[in-house]
Image 1 (cartoon, rainbow, N blue to C red):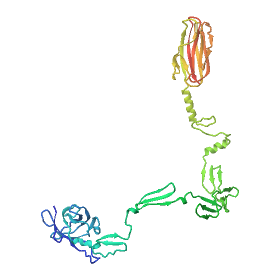
Image 2: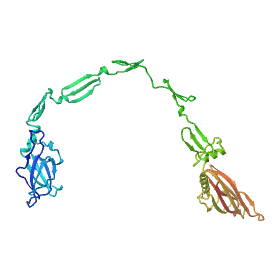
Image 3: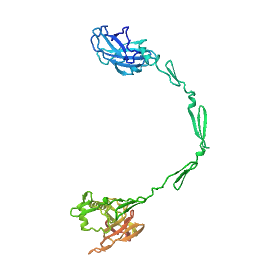
Length: 445
């Protein structure tokens, strides 16, 4: 704990109200002691001075710091009001309002770790500052002003009511009356005479109804014609006798075939790609055709790329819906007509053969082939195509040579189908024991 001796001469005021040049401050002396009561001798210490409002625990109205050097007896001297300000303003301390307390804090090491040394109420001497701006001063009241015990009062305003100077309402009525209300009542102004006014222009005279007229002089409109004479390069504006000569801005493009260089007069030049030049040299006439949709052509005249063509061909080949199925049939019931033959897949990567029939997956032209052999009877074999209606196409038969009892089948044709159309192999029997076996295959062209 730091002890600070507060002598009876705690605050010696060095301010003099008789001299405006006297320094403002409170001369202060104290003795710093350690926690054993020994003086802190010949050492630089830190002291924080605070002027508190009302009590020893009041709010600091002003605060400053000092770094005095103690003498061999621990005595140090400083002037309150002339230290390093940390808060407030010493000149603005309100000495005339409330009690003031002086709080002393000290750091014996000379740093900023302050410890409370003590607080004491300021008595009569510092209140001489009050005389600087109140009490017996030389202020003189002007007209309409009175000063009484430091209180300044406005006496020149005969209407000293603040309420009747405050507007509480304002409105504009349907009959064009402006009404303003304050504490003194409501005042009304008739605005009807200035309502529904209109402007009229007669020649160069502009008139407002119920008011005056002014002559606006020559009337010029903004509707003017701008024209360019291509022969003389003159730009003219209607109602303006002086045209603008644009000849200096006229520029010419030139092309040098040998270097593929395109230049503009008075400007820069660029080199055109040689590929286009070579193409135009070989055939400069496009015959009305144009290059467009290179990446995804839609019209027959569109140019495209090799990559697009290769991809299209590969896609078409990959989706030709090719298949091959085998069949083996023997007549066990006698007479019947156009009965479907059971088909067995040999290969069918696109699953286009099911329930003993081919179903077209997409519209287009298809090729179908039937081959087979019959050792007994040469039964009648047909293709049945269902596309809106039903069509039957007989498969060609020939007798084998030299064994005429064997009949060979072979027929290949193309048909235009819509998506969902079906193709079947059917037989017509006449005699029990007739038989045929072979293959049915096809693809989309």
